[in-house]
Length: 250
Image (cartoon, rainbow, N blue to C red; front, side):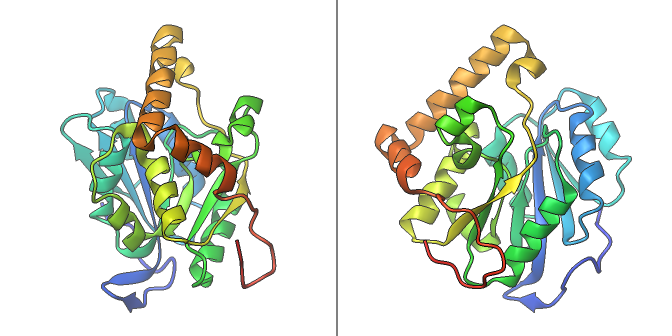
């Protein structure tokens, strides 16, 4: 299902349009993904929304998506994990920027999304904006998970393609993106986001949720090791985007 055109600039550049697409991978999210799409429908700066069903067994999710006509729905036959789902969705991206969003967000704010998209698409010297979860719990702020592992981020489609050349496990996507940006000295800042994620124990139950949380931590640490984690903790995306300025320096 194609999104109606004309929501943002449609000037071609290197085979892609000058604008922003959105990729939302999901797996058994029920009504949560529909809540996210209800917010995004008011973000006119997004000219393409791609929802990737990562082999859901909950067909209620898919049925609810069919009620949103202005999306691309890609269904994978089996569960491959978040990173592979994003990689599949990236093949459909038509714009030179892409917004990555989790499907289980609560309190997502359309004005915050609009502002971030307008900012990065108008500043050629800005490579990525991370939407920092300012309402995250204290534990996330202490380990900087509200920035380092926030799934809401906007970056260039070409950069994401280079990042996803190598295989990666489900929870390693944000770590891979961070390392690529850091190693290639890309300009990265954060902007505040009111969005909150849904804890895994609320979706899966206490024991299954705890197991999933531990698996996520193991995958993150296994991606590049503790040294890379502490390096990102100390040096990556430390600064909020200065409002009203056109040039940035890290």
